[in-house]
Length: 259
Ligand code: IPD
Ligand code: CA
Ligand code: CA
Image (cartoon, protein in one colour):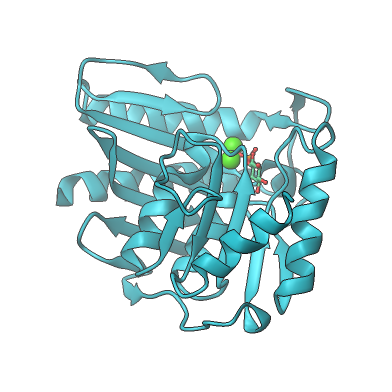
């Protein structure tokens, strides 16, 4: 298992170097949708990460956001976001990362999330705890939403579903101490794992947004479910992550926002 985490870290750092080198000088932006962009940097990071993983583990499946879908008959599958926080990156807002997760028979077993500007590396292994730059991390102890700093994100189809997104947001503004929208779901999850945030929710994320981050949260002692406090999978389209103590309160807010 050590080997897998070491390679996940190597891959996340390799992608992170690409992001760092080109930070502040994005040359090419393409539009996947009206507000959904991809840069030459996302693609370069993905190519290098996929090459590395494929050379080390040629039998493993690999799924990555910018087009890689190598499905092989293996119990192992790498799930990668080569640049999470692309809009931030394109605007020189330094909240973005590389996320590399490894799934075995549908369960996340290793993950690395690397923020190359602040040089923050979050890692987790199933059953082995969560770490930031080698130090063990844990979720916060806040048990009252009124004292909680929570975060969210708006998916790229927010314009078509603006009503519900605004209801959710406004219910949390009413119920929590404060709400942030930082623009990188993988980092949002890691920030819950280390107690920087007390909770996070977002609808319609993709497997690569959450694969590594959810393991970091659960290994940091937190809880991850869907909006109904039900079992979470990276293939589900709702995620609530919290320190555990706030979990039911957060799910109740989301239910209230749907009445
Ligand atoms: C996005 C970020 C953002 C979230 C979006 C994601 P990308 O990923 O994680 O925080 O709100 O839903 O799609 O496109 O920057 O990799
Ligand atoms: Ca993403
Ligand atoms: Ca991305």
